[in-house]
Length: 517
Image (cartoon, rainbow, N blue to C red; front, side, top):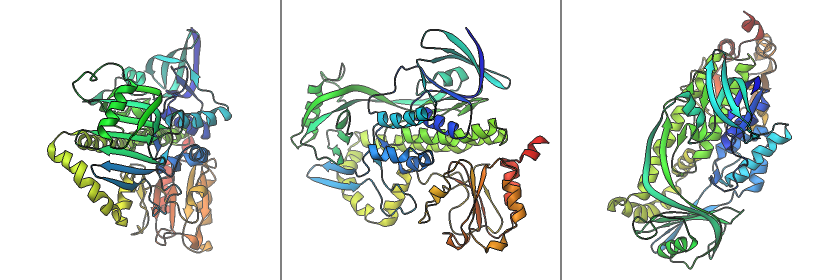
């Protein structure tokens, strides 16, 4: 067995969540390894869509443009009900505070390819065929035993371990964290294939009294993803998924003459709704499917996992660099666990409504909803609210211990804990560099205490960047705000007194002199 090796973070699992975490750890200079027991990344499509907030969060690392280039941002939704087809948008061009006002359709295989390629170009290799066998927290480290591709074992001492290893997480089991919830009784059929006769450039939902069936555009290695509930009872209730069985379902649910052919992947599966009792056990953290699994309703799963990772990575890196206190890691669960619980509730309700055989719910989804939805979406407020919820732009951390409102609290503008909106001045690009960003949004040039600004930035290893917006500020009442590395507003205030800001950074980003004492 190889001798013990030490590092800051061991990332277990190289799906989208683990890869996103590794990308951020690299950007912040952490010493880490990323391992995965599988020999290759996924080649099937699996998760199909990337939400606007995820595109925003990944943009600072230079991967979002490639994701968009490989995907399709112009997909519409066609809802087919008896006697009519309803056209619904999967975008909101009225969302002026994001550069990505759309749902990007892109297979998980391509998402992993882009993230993995970025890591490789940065000099980091995913260690495939490497399996975590055991972990034990021992003082200031987690002692991990790994088995490598050639069968040899090694010991690794990591200051922290993050389980991004999916629903059957070894990390979660080894840490003794419970995974509570239930499995739905329905079985679903899934296939990536070609479909003749189906309108391209749109996702299609067929809603009938008999059941529901979906087609989602892919691009490659197949053009379409088919998803349907397996009919209970009968000769096709069990056994392997076959093309003829899928064609029979399509013929039953769809009036249009659609022909299925050339499948590249067919399977059946059950859906779970489960959440980890805790996202942390001492020096061990969970993210992504290791922390929460649910139905694919609303395309929330992969996106929630990636945002788990990007909430955690910079915190781990700054703590390991002794640039932030250990208490910062406690904010991961307090910020992300409520998000996970909300996603579990939302997807559970959506799934129940979509699959229930209750006559009233069946009437609502096949008759009432298709008639009311287009009318509701004509109202800008309702359309915007629905888009911001599904797109995850509405997620906030207003109640986080690391969120603070300063003096002269502004009545308008984004609040502390909200994501930083983009503006015509392109604030997202301005704040893309690794670290915190202090936006001086108001007051004349001479109004700011230069000495205090220097005391904030000069002794913090260039982790705080200063931007003077002057009269170009989009929020007149907010004179200064501090933006976190993940794009959320940590602190905001009115007036030009920086005392509150100094107290905030002294607590959450102490200077080298303060750390020495």
